[in-house]
Amino acid sequence: VALLLLCAVLASGCNKIKSKQEIKKGNDFFKAAQYQTALAAYQEAMRLDPNEKKLHKNVGLAYMGLYQPGSKHPKDLEYAAKAIEHLKVYTEAFPQDKKAREFLVSLYLSTERFDDAIAFYQGMVKEDPKDTKAMQSLAQMYFKKGDVDNAVSWLKKRLEAETTPEAKAEVYYFIGVQAWDRSYNFPDLDPVQRAHIVDEGLDALNKALQIKPDYFEALSYVNLLYREKAKIEADPAKKQEYVDTANKYLQQALEL
Image (cartoon, rainbow, N blue to C red; front, side):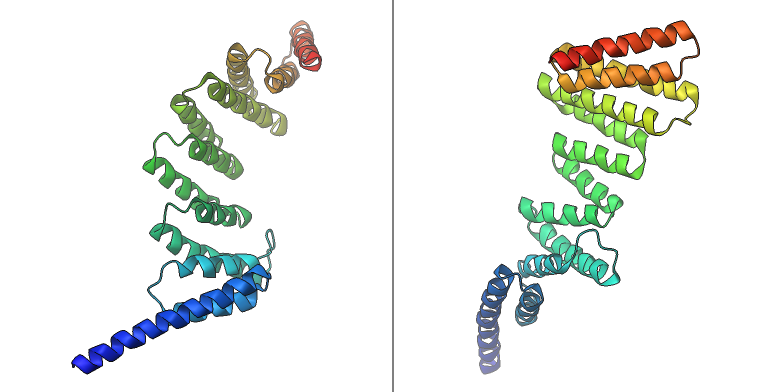
């Protein structure tokens, strides 16, 4: 029994050495952008040392190298899915590796797996309730999905979490931009709802300008939102008033 145990230990140690040799070969091929050959080496390393979680990063990145971003070809989608599968295993074992987490999210985005990206960022907020970058990313994901209510909700959560006036001004600016986007790109919205969206955007942008009066981008979007306001106004006098106000803000922006 002792002899068998010794043989097992020696075999395990031998496999670990062989695995490291395969990893080194794989790394050389990866650096040369020979991802298919690198993948084969990493997979052999994983066969030799199946309990080594770090190998999932190597395998995931090799699949990522084979994937053509934006491609809908079944083979590319398969590569992306495999890359995600292995990077998820790795990042769960080593959550401190921020670069690997960024790779994983980039794959979610390029394959339009927005729900997975949302779950990922929600996990980050759960880990750190003041992670404003994750909150901003969540807002962007919801906007991409067309879920405006949740998107604005996350922007407001970010607003509460931010501690500096400059950061708060940026959030107000994003709220204003999204209000313009909804009004401009969805002109068939109910007029009452559209007017509410425009006013909400103007309110946010004015708050941004209170913090940062020389905020060129915010001035530009105040101009654009007043033009949206003019589009939905039936009274000719009021319509002209909004256009004049838009021109005033446009001039301020141009002067800056």
